[in-house]
Length: 415
Picture 1 (spheres, rainbow, N blue to C red):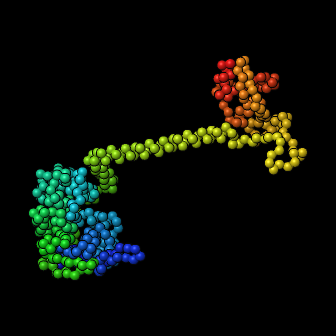
Picture 2: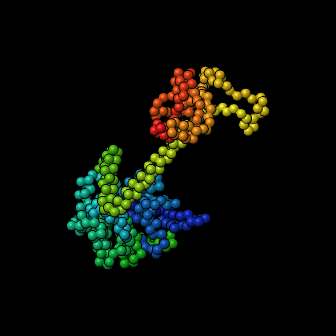
Picture 3: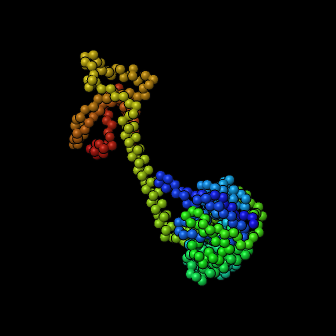
């Protein structure tokens, strides 16, 4: 008998605390093509871990696993996914159907991942449902189906891409006795059609229906009888259809992803609305914070520009740490022209300030007055909302011209 699935000294351990917990301890097992095998054991015995390794969902930490002579350890991620997708089918105790999809759409899912044409996979899904007695339930949601019907949908899903090897994890665990018998009958039919069926269960009545019962205890095989009858074929079916181009796979996958996302949102309208509301509030909050922060930044920069980041103020008199003022000499007005001629000077102005009272007609206010030159406003980056700066004639004639700030201007004008 040719071994389709061949395990040699398979070990699987997981880190736990300071050490490792060994779940599988040197499993050696052969499963031929076309066999119907049951793997039994108590909870925690390692049978589900063994099933995951058989289905290429997990990798062993030691030993060799060959599928039709191919060492799965030598396959990269894409090759392993292709092997799983095209040759293995999975049946779960809790069905794992997508609640927002119909029965036919659930069956289609593996073919979507395989990049199959929409018409071809839809026809294949309906064909499988008819074959399993659910032709009139193709457009039903999972919530509208009984447990047995949902399990039959999951069996059809497992067969969508061929499913030469069927891995069933407690296929009757969530069903009543009648539905369980129907599911087991379907698995027997699949075995008769040449599929390799591996059932993981702790139910002795289910296990008794298999040709061979393999018992596992604490990660070790304690019973592994020989196969009852020879089976034909130890190779996997090769796909005859040509692989679609990379661009076609991408465009088809992207379109299907959008369709499935839209179906998921449409099936859960309130959840979608609340999710979108949360996203909108989050974006609005971030935008508001950025706008407020930028406005505050601009205000600070405006204040700094008004002070003059590249401005030097020279004051007469003595400051802390200065030498004896007898050896100091203050700038004079005549020095202004010499300073203005320097290449590193943009603007220069004298300034003298004093607090006093200003009077215009019957208006009398306390103010701070500054006597300045024409370039004073350039030095401090000030702009005029109305009027202009002092001109040369006004400076030479010592004209009584006043520039008012925006706070005092309305009072003076009204006077």
